[in-house]
Image (cartoon, rainbow over all chains, first blue to last red; front, side, top):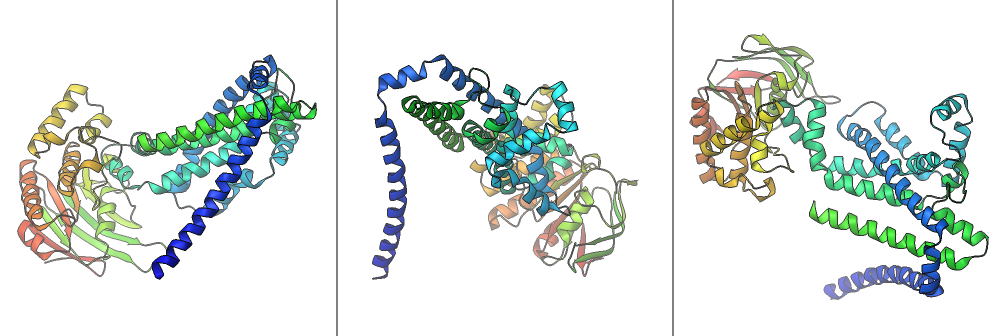
Length: 260
Length: 214
């Protein structure tokens, strides 16, 4: 009797999971069925969309790499040092995750109108430039990379790093030679999460870098631009491309998780 | 060789404390420090090797005050209870870690790794990673890793606690042999009286935050 009730419980949970996956599956099938392969090919070979694809891939890669570079020291500090105000800093680092993306864009554009912002722009032009795309992506993706790396370092025992100190390492040496090699799986996951997040970023890029064709147009802005001129087939084709890229990232995360 | 003067340490936000701990272990001595669980044995080991800073007092090694030196400049090897092998490294890399960090040449590192692996009977394990080692094998690898740094002092935190009875006797014998062969000053922490009787040149006990000779 008890076994039956337990089975029913798991069956209900499995049904909930299956329904959710089915919902996603149906949406994807409907999206794919909306356009023909010819229309898809035509859209993807257009110079604007090819430019947006290339720009999306390289800006996402740059933003994810910068996010990981920032995430490693911050998350290592938060994971290993118990200092006053740590929970406050921890909460503050989550702000970009909870802020509406458009607000991040507005904050960026207002900051770069300030004295400090204008001084930075004299050295590196960012507003309505390709650099601005990377910065907008990085601003949000970094918070996700920090959260992911924090989980990785929290799961790693600090004892091997302590032993490394007695064997001749400095603190930096213990991080570089012991903690980072042990955290490589988490680093790949953090990079992929930051990359995927950057690839899908729209609001901050639209506000801060604009959506100039063949200049600051990335894939999400392409979808928006195509939709706004009523070219739904192109918008669907670009959406499918983004889905393919996102699935590739998921596969990389899963495979690296098993192999590293 | 090792001298602690009036070492004090207070756990943040807790009542646990070490109070005015004095300790003297002569050179090339196998000292066994006993005490009940949670009495501060591990904390004292961490203060000795520099992983914790005492609130007051002085740590001396070979007559030199090392209280404010970083762990890497103390000439003390440390084997924590969980051994803390490096998860991403092969056994050969673990043993070669200290010589590599200290800038030894590749050929010299290989010679140190070969010699220690031979001495500890782990030559056949050099290409394995920690997750593919048994408890006894991990113990030997951790010992070889610590000895590769050529320390004057070796701190062993409950090194036999995770081993079965047969392996325990083997490793105990090995520890005593290594201590003599490498002229080490050893402080071995345990709560087993049998271990202390079998190994100790000097038996010490940590009670109520103070060290007393047995």
